[in-house]
Length: 322
Ligand code: CP
Image (cartoon, rainbow, N blue to C red; front, side, top):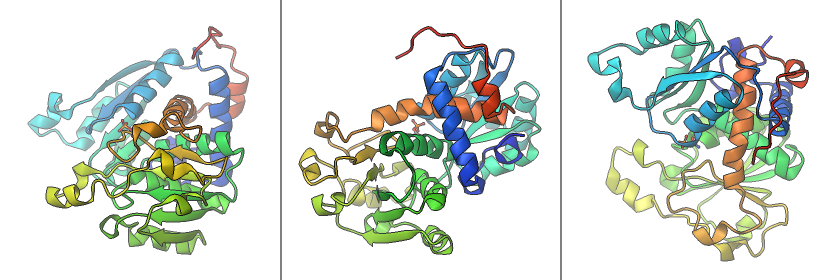
């Protein structure tokens, strides 16, 4: 049986520790051999009602590298939703064409709704300010690769903790691994109460800060920077006021622990200066590449392939990849 709930992946919150670790093991297998034909004959639909670069392209690359085919759209304006077609009807139609639906939508809860009306699995590629579970799987894979463990880490979440769906998903997933979080945000973009209550319920330690300096960075194993989410603001004056509150500069890393890795879901706007990119602590571009392997695992799992199936797969194409 698939390790994803109902074979759909709507929220990271329901994945057990064992299930997360199995997906990481599967991602490791795909990093060793990313090119296969295991999905030959399968069709993956990518429905993006909101813009994306990494999530869509890494899902489509994952499907293509595994021998599947991709249909979909990148702009809802070119679909019949502009004529008034409902999400329910769109999903039911696409489910008639494809074996799996990957969907990004601007409405919180849209992925859950789609999973409830779809006869094929639905993977949430981001729903409003709510969740981004596949980003979290690649974040966990990146943390595991760079720290050698997910246990007992100090993780600093910096920037837009109000609208940033990636930080919401990450803190939920980390409940299994005894983290200590530092929430670093301007008051207007602080971690919402519901996620702080989630931390209290699951005994996740957290400390809130407004300051962001080298002494705070010195405590971190993982520094998770985020973009201020302009598209979620109703008042753009407010966005202008807070958008550059925190900018990570190279000189702020001089007290950093050797194992510190800087993650960012990307895109970045202004929150990491370019002089950080060649620091040994910078990991955000490798993190984005890890998305390919994590999403290969997520697609295969949703389509019912077990870790054993992947380990025993004989369709490997062994030409080198980057
Ligand atoms: N990290 C992320 O979701 O990037 P995209 O918006 O480009 O998909």
